[in-house]
Image (cartoon, rainbow, N blue to C red; front, side, top):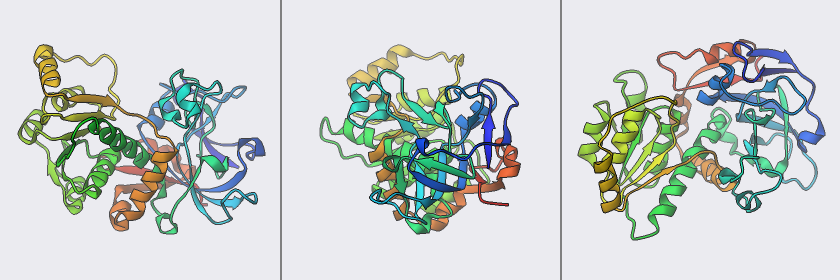
Length: 351
């Protein structure tokens, strides 16, 4: 069968190659691949910056934003042929650490976890794949066009979970949220903010293309002014930072309401330097009881929350997040960003 593979840490190795059929040792559900979302992590791996192949293998099957249909499922698994499913990305470490032992493998303490399509486990970028039934998530049939958005939605479901857990240390009644970045993570974070009944503001540098209208159609407000100006005027109760741009990160941290919570989901590049008044920033965080928290990955509870959020969302709005679809044999095109891109998807079932 065909799969999208790379040689980790080797640039220009991305290719559609023939690989063996997945064996039962990789999962008790046999799934026909439907589609695969492409994100920044995939592009980093394709550039040779990141990634690990499974032990004893030179190539890694890419893909962690999965969507498939069950072909075969064992009795008692809770799944049946035809079910629309997504595979969970991370697996607990084998020791396990205390967090992994309690199902919180997104918070692994010793780094010995593995990840499908990223770290020591083949991903979901193949015509067929297997997954353990306990690491598969069933989606509503109506999400067949957009189900690959589940994994990025889990990232923001976890971010919101972290915000709400931290807020609960004292009286917490947030009204205003600022989301920085209007890529898939930012737009999905805004969606979950709207679903919580909050006043949502989204900041991005572009002024045309689909992003402003997508934000408006959520009932949120779109901004393209400098981050300091927007955040300084809003003084939001919650900020979900989804750019990783250091100037935006600092602006978000420096401009919150009292008891403000900033959740960082964007990963910054190393070596970016910025001159800031660290004393003033520290003073504001301390005196206002502010919190800055990093958040990455997701556990099974976040997958369930994300599936629920997508099921409640406007389906046409979700479809508009997917701005390009390419067939598997032309998968390399998905790794060449275009100006109007939001989410690019590889069709695994196309001939």
